[in-house]
Picture 1 (cartoon, one colour):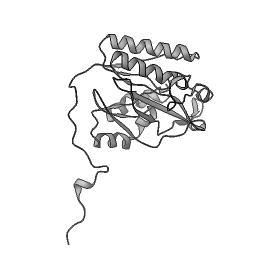
Picture 2: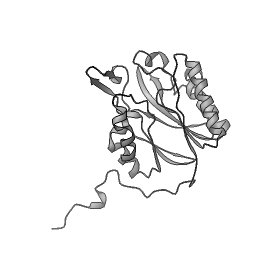
Picture 3: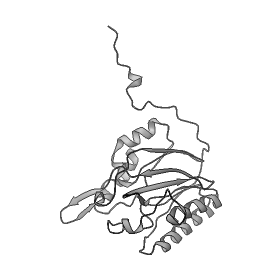
Picture 4: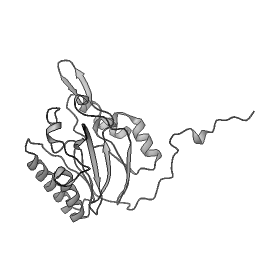
Amino acid sequence: MEASFKPEEARVPAALPLPTPPVTKFKIALCQLSVATDKERNIAHAQQAIEDAADKGAQLILLPEIWNSPYSNDSFPVYAEDIDAGGDASPSTRMLSEVSRSRKITIIGGSIPERSGDKLYNSCCVFGTDGKLLAKHRKIHLFDIDIPGKMTFKESRTLTAGERPTIVDTEVGRIGIGICYDIRFQELAAIYAARGAHLLCYPGAFNMTTGPLHWELLQRAR
């Protein structure tokens, strides 16, 4: 009796041949930002950091997680933006679109609190060199932690988990997107690898209680 098992079909989704990257060498900038309670100041600060990086030749520029808002459940609803509506409803992504177009750069826009209907998400927007929104990733794995005497935080108290992996073709290659705690789950990275990603990007704002134990290690593993 012929075996029905086919090893080449064991990986789901099936692996794709790695596409030829559009560029073989490029400069990446990772922007570290100190966030204040003034949203307009946060946006202006992020724009300045992006423009400084572009001036130094960066073609791919990344912002951190929740860069336009303090990182708290009380703040998320106040600072949340309607990304799909755009314009005045989302000044943070409007800035990212404008600067990516004017500087002809690709931006992985960290993440901001997103309002969609009656739900809030932790969302990362990717903008191409023409200023167009290429992709939006909603954080899939929410960070809920309770370490007695050290740290308690539950994103799920205000945020809704995303449901889909996000892989996007850009001017510098195919990129798989995760946000912070998404890095803990290797299945997401395996999907991106199978779909031919050249690069994995995980904008983060990791805490200093658990972060030092695994942040650098998990980056290498993924």
